[in-house]
Image (cartoon, rainbow, N blue to C red; front, side):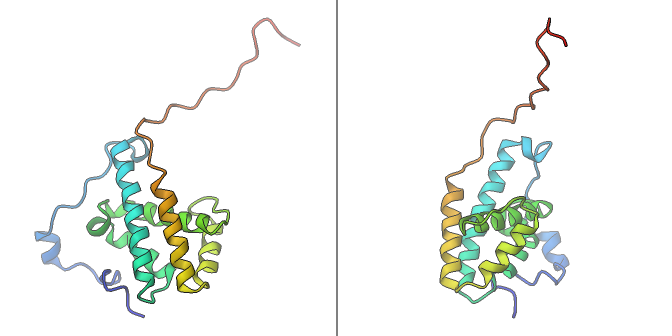
Length: 164
């Protein structure tokens, strides 16, 4: 089956003229990606965009896993994040879909996601679309925090004056 019409084949290298004359690639995070609130917002937005794309492409009879698989190769032009971060968007979208099915997703890179997606891919397209829509609705309500994460608390020390 050919790739979705909105995804050029991810097995074909980009043409040199596109790379030279195309728009500049999206900027990466300012420092470590998880501590950059603006970049986290972009990843969150990219995940919502990918969930919308997945739902639309399911109408075109493309398998769920095939649609998700090509996203990282088009992260720059379609999702607005550097290609190297496209895998994070794919993993988060997959985890959200599996969680919408009521399954334990665990790590976005764990075996539970793969097993969950395999089971979901066996469902009728209408049910897959319902799960993707539910995942997008729930994920839209979980906007990333604008504050930077605080350092973890140190270990609790015994109260002074007590010894065994």
